[in-house]
Amino acid sequence: MRKLLCITAHPDDEAGAFGGTLLVYGERGVQTSVVCLTAGTAARNRGTSRSNEELAELRRREFAASCRVLKVAHGEVLDYPDAKLDRVELYRAAGDLALRIREIRPQVVITFGPDGGLTAHLDHAMAGLFATMAFEWAGRPDRYPEQLQGGLTPHRVQKLYYATSDFILTDRQPIAPPPVTARIEIGKERFARKNEAFRQHTTQTPLFDRVRKNLEHSTSTTEMYHLAATSSPREATLESDLFEGVEDE
Ligand SMILES: [Zn+2]
View 1 (cartoon, rainbow, N blue to C red):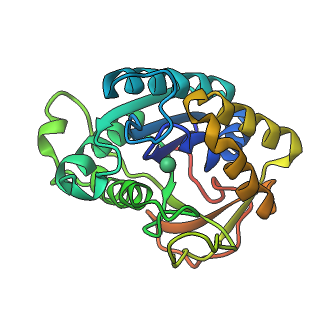
View 2: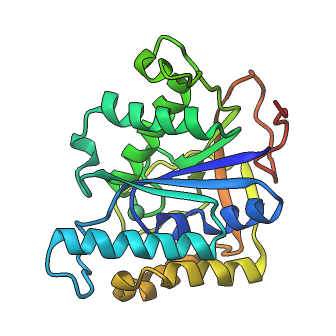
View 3: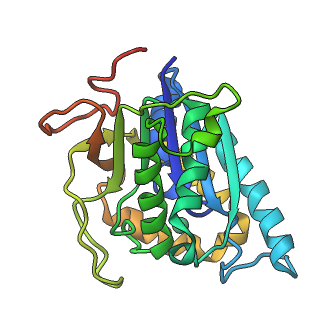
């Protein structure tokens, strides 16, 4: 079975950054999963919540609703501190993600690049770095051997992609985006569903207008990626399918 794992930083990234791609592959019978590192409790927009715990609870529910719209088979929100992923120990976070990779066993992983994506968010950059090390280490029996004691085996993901784009937002911190090597056409209908998924994050309603503006700036029915690593050496070519060249195990 073909499987796609998406690693994000905040509830709503799965919709805003990866929503169209998750829909495309879900429709093709690929089992899609999202692992989100934080519950997004550093958000300025806090809905009706009166505490971080209440906000975490709300945002986890919104994440689950968004995953339903995106037909994501497995969604999980971890408990890392929002807005502080650059202070998190790499060994621990990469280990948590390596464990998910060894359990889910995807052929393809999508995440953010070290630029932090269009918004240049530090948490996005860190999620991408943790995911990158997890991609490398999940396949090595010498990394996190304690995970392998209960019957779990190392898993080599075949392809790792960073979300990227062919434009930048000028009102953000400067970024150096990885070059586009894959373009996924999501079409108008999926674009509408992606927005619908984003709107499930009702605590973030005040952000909707800004996000809509960002999306209009782009060729909005295309999501772009950079092929960052593969389990078998190759030259980069422009792709229109993230599973191009993936071998069934
Ligand atoms: Zn985010």
